[in-house]
Length: 161
Image 1 (cartoon, one colour):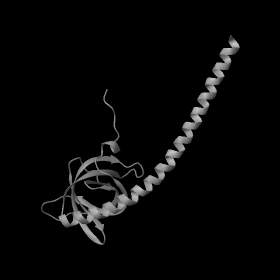
Image 2 (cartoon, rainbow, N blue to C red; image 1 turned 45 degrees about the vertical axis):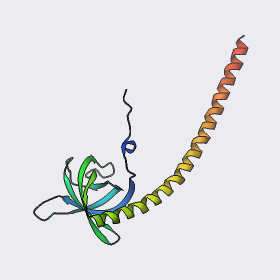
Image 3 (cartoon, rainbow, N blue to C red; image 1 turned 45 degrees about the horizontal axis):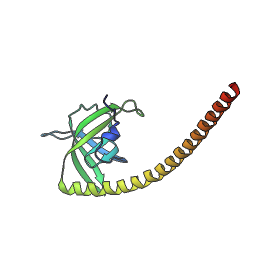
Image 4 (cartoon, rainbow, N blue to C red; image 1 turned 180 degrees about the vertical axis):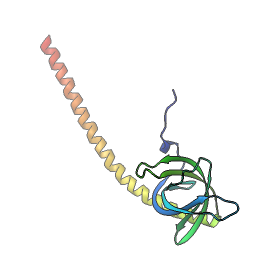
């Protein structure tokens, strides 16, 4: 039987949640792109997810503009998945893979992403410690309950004899 894995388990790169304005448009070789402004959801070294009113099809090339450190970066991405937004019914969430970026912009993006990963990792370590303490307390409680049940069963067996 094949084991089911979550999308987070399948990811090869760390994805960091971001709340950043982006502009996106279907990629056009000739002609002027018409941009729509929305916000990014998360970012990794090889992809981005963002919210949009556009119902892009899987495989669509999209031109993104993201402002980092007061400079507009242009990215060419390919739509990998699309799903309806749970929070906003008339919008979609899009996951896209990075196809092309200027080498200088890539360095800038990698630096920005590294700092975001450090901040995100520090936050998740703190929350993981809290969660692991809660899990340990629950395990202790479960063990105590199991011991009490076992003790009750032994007493019940002795009374029956």
